[in-house]
Length: 199
Image (cartoon, rainbow, N blue to C red; front, side):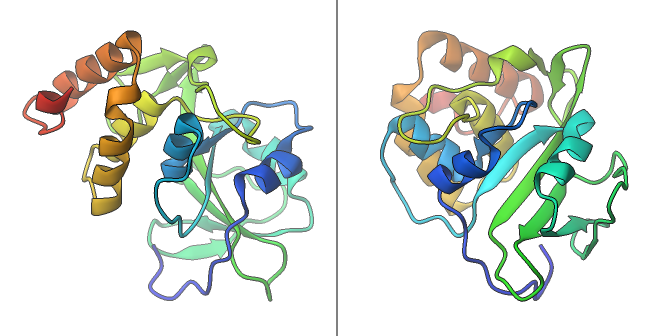
């Protein structure tokens, strides 16, 4: 994260759904909101809101946010303007978005890769999943939500206190298939991870 990126006033999940509800590419509310929308209740405060898209859809997302002030985290840790029509390189995974340069940041776009209809885990491409199985069952107004087991895998790399809180909030609500997938994925990438004993 940039050292002084400016203030945030995140959109609500329902505002995101209103903004992106008409687009013709897949997207998912991600991060901590993905967990809360799966649970159907807000379990903690959220300083931002994340939306995950696939790399091939970055141009369509830029068009959907036409007129917004968009900045790519390139290199990671610093922000630069995302020029109209620019294709972001494989090393860029985050885009910060605000209505105009004088507005607070309100949305973060996260970019993941997929090949032949299979999503690839950024930290270890041995872990894949059909794009069609990235959808979680949201409760509320969000049109699309990332499956909680996928979001937990993303959070597992270096869990912060809020990631630990998200795990505790949702772990008992995972279905058998969701739990099995997360256990299998964690066992592959981090076989001594402390979450495994709680799953």
